[in-house]
Every structure is written in C-alpha cells, then in structure tokens.
Image 1 (cartoon, rainbow, N blue to C red):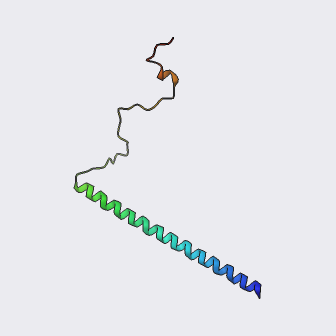
Image 2: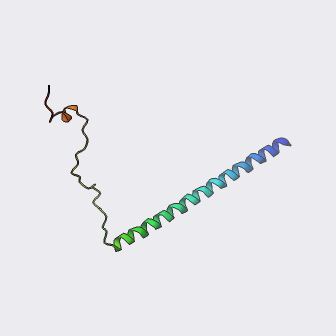
Image 3: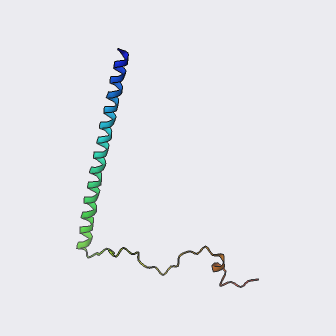
Length: 81
C-alpha cells in the first residue's frame, strides 16, 4: 500500500505543478496585454501632442562617426617620428 500512496503523491504533485505553470502563463499573458494597452494609450497621447514616430525603420543619421578599430586611422593626423 505505501507504493500506491507514493504514486498518488507524485501524481498530486505533478497536477499541482501543472496548475501552477498554467497560472503562471495566464499571468504572463495578462501582463503583456496590460503592457500593450498602456503603450497604445501612451502612443495616442503622443499623437494628440503632434508627435509622429519614425516609421521608415531606419535609424536617424548622426554626424558622429562610427569608431574605427584601425590604428592607422587614429594616427593619420599625427606626425610620425
């Protein structure tokens, strides 16, 4: 009989674990829906203020140059000794 109670305990534990995982997934989905709703509301407020997001998918251009790892590029302006 102890083997039956152990099996029952294991099955009970696995059922509890599954229910906890299901609850966790439900909470995550709810949180993501809340986040989406908050972001949509914020975007609507920005639109009312006249803000238009960059929808082209390209990043803004910058006058700053990207860092070069070439040591020659760093010493071009310096006189060699």
